[in-house]
Length: 125
Image (cartoon, rainbow, N blue to C red; front, side, top):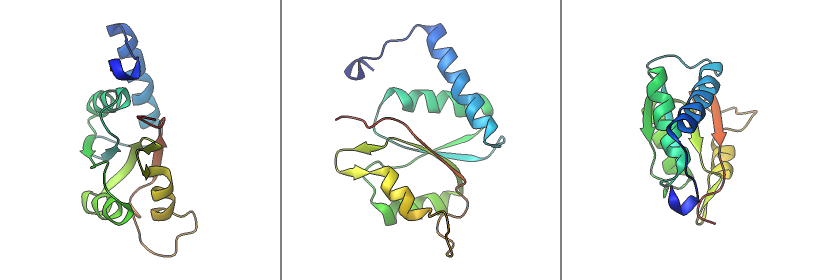
C-alpha cells in the first residue's frame, strides 16, 4: 500500500502471510472457522485475506464504520471465532469496542463465540 509506505517483494509477502497463518493456526482455528477483519484498506487486510485463505478459514469483512452494538451484532450473527482489527481508524476505537463486547469476566453471552482478537496498528493517523 503506497499510502502506508509499504512495498514488499513476493518473497516478503509470502513470509508475512506464512507468519500470520502460523499465528492463526496456533489459535486453534480450523478450516471452516470464521475470522473477521475490521479495518479500512491497508496492508494488514491483504495479509489477513491471504492467510485465512491458506488455512481454509472464512474471512468475514466487517464494516469499519460500525459502532459497538453493530459490531457485536455482526460478529455474533456471522459466528466469528477470531477478529483481526486496526486499533483505531478516524473516530473509531476498535480495541475499546471489543473490550466492551468481550469483557474478560463476562456474565452475559455477548460475542461468546469470539475467542481471539488481534489488533494491528492504527490506520490513517
